[in-house]
Image (cartoon, rainbow, N blue to C red; front, side, top):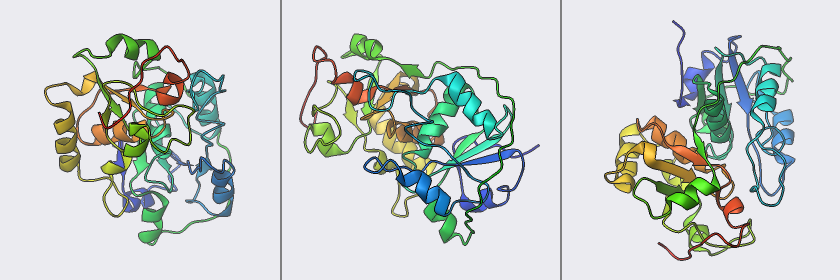
Length: 284
């Protein structure tokens, strides 16, 4: 039976399969301050055979001003885009970036949402690949049209759900933004600073070690268990600024053997767009 990876994969493990026809690799590099960066970087050099997916174009849908900065893409459109790159229902998909998984994890979560289990993030990203002595190239991969049938999972909640469960014991809301933004300080991406009342701050970069790789599963499990207390992982709702870095926390929990958490994709950028929704500032 072929190996299957559903959370993280190491550079040397990926190197053994990068040319396999049923393995599809996606470059998810992006820069919030320079939206053209990812495609330009991919055109310059990427993992062999890697296709490019753009956070704004492929992994998000159109913004309306009240649905957050990176609304979820239409699942059928995303499935078609993946199929155009050769992804079938049994493909092993690997996503990578150069930013600690913050964009690759978005594709990981989206594919899980589509019902695809064989999807993993390259642990340590492009830097780990290069550090392992693996080659890059600039060849544009040929599209290999496949057939993909989606089966959406109930992995997400909306703003109404979060509002209804504020202060209730059946929801643990984890905010993946940096501590200063969580406190309402140095907010440069959204028009309002602060956080959703009752949220717990778990900066997504706290899942990484000094090398930029994910911490050992046992360490992640211990750290998240301290946040959850007596709560079940299935009571966890992840959020961040726009539903992107929250996926890193979701991935870390899965890698730690704590499955079942969900995503509030609209996150703070959607939440704060409605002035009737409550907000909080400060450390707690």
